[in-house]
Image 1 (cartoon, helix red, strand yellow):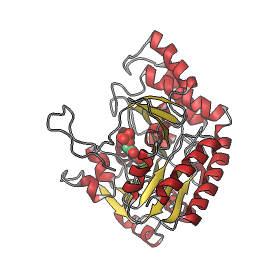
Image 2 (cartoon, protein in one colour):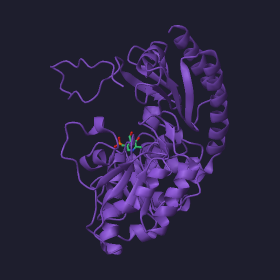
Image 3 (tube, protein in one colour):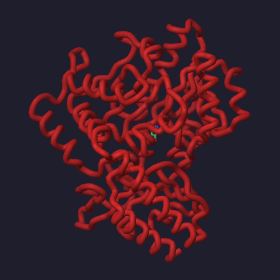
Image 4 (cartoon, protein in one colour):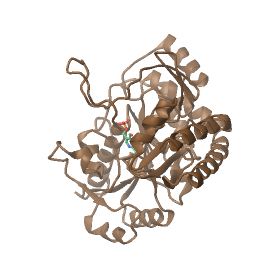
Amino acid sequence: MANDTSISLTSPLMATYGRFPITLVKGKGSYVWDDQGNQLLDFTSGIATCNLGHVPDVVKEKLEEQLQNLWHCSNLYHIPNQEQLASLLTANTCGDQVFFCNSGAEANEAAIKLARRYSQKIKGTDSFEVVTFKQSFHGRTLATLSATGQEKIQQGFLPLVQGFSYLPFNDMDALDQILTLKPAAVLLELVQGEGGVIPAEPEWVEKLAQICEQNDILLMVDEIQTGMGRTGTLFAYEQYSIEPDVISIAKGLGSGFPIGAIIAKEKAANAFEPGSHGSTFGGNPLATAAGVATVSHIVESNLLKQVKEISAYLDTQLQNLKENFPQIKEIRGKGLLKGLVVDGNAPQIVQKALANQLLLLTAGPDVVRILPPLTASKEEINKFKATMEIVFQSM
Ligand SMILES: Cc1ncc(COP(=O)(O)O)c(C=O)c1O
């Protein structure tokens, strides 16, 4: 989703991002402000991270309180916020135990390590293969880009970490190949985010889960983008008849404060023991303070009900746009993770939206990705729609 790729040779920053030509200095709710004082409607939520909107008071207060007391201590000591957040996560999922880290890639890295260790230590086999899916995205570390089913992410980083096989997504027949791969685990997104906002078909997911259960293959779901209420339930797996063995999460967990985690069922979690995995910053007092405030708010308020209502409203508005603008071929996604499939000019649409003070994302050349905060109002959806009308009329 590059825009300004001409990063100056004198820049002290490595050119890993194609950045838009604006500088954001402030955020509140659904809005951000740039350094020129312009107000922009943010329907990217920092790529599904600021799910409670920018600088939510509930998280800010908890962070301010924690800032007065203790910022960091190592995982050699008990950290109350960490234990509270783990309890909140296990009470609200099918998982039993949690490991904390700092990002999505690290969460998937932990899931992959857990799968290998489960297979070797608990199952007593030396199978280490993890089956993932084409168009998937699981992160940028060497292991997680190897898990990712997109060559463009892997380019230039060969040799890949061994032990990954990629099957076509949503393909019933391809599931027959799983057993021949003798995998330790399967890792999938329930809505492929970066790969084009493609939801997994329920029958396909249920058959996959059945194969995993019958053959003691760990079912691992990457809920880094779909989690924390984004699709209308705390986690997207709740909308399928499955109980994953491992759930990887990050992004919205800290409302913008960096944190990641895996939540695992006891049988899988038991594969880790003291010394098998760790992180200096993982689950530190500040990050887990943000996590406790975020998760408590989502489960204790009526936010998830609100997401269902506001996403239904967004669906209606998107449908109306599609009827009026033939450039829109399809609307995909779940809850407040939506993709507009367009005629190969998604980056241009995102540029034009930016010129009209609306932040959007792409998910490949054909898909405009829309990620409003879960707290978005009808008025903000109306504003988004009015801006999209201006954008499509101009094309
Ligand atoms: C589904 C999924 N998995 C993993 C990641 C990697 O997360 P992070 O950028 O925090 O490492 C992302 C990031 O976009 C993601 O969408």
